[in-house]
Image (cartoon, rainbow, N blue to C red; front, side, top):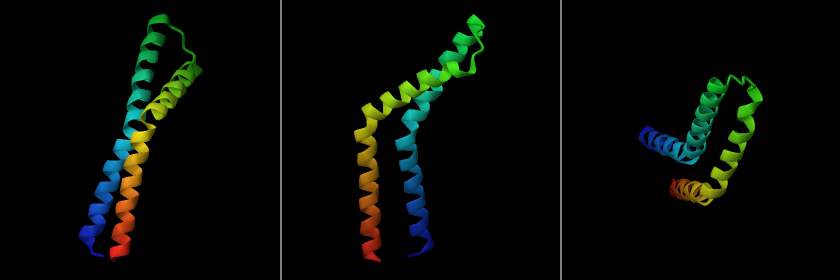
Length: 87
């Protein structure tokens, strides 16, 4: 195993991390932005107000995109195991 292989695996793993965690993070950020705008306009400054909507949005994102996320992780794991077996 050389340095280039390690760098390729790291690059692929970072791409997979972004693909798997990205949708949930983007949804959470969008919900947080909408709720913060709502809080600023109504002057309701309750810190726990953002928790439940974000939790529900992330839960729905994981339900809807879970199959996609699992497939990405499974394919990456299979490629890693093939690479290990080839060493």
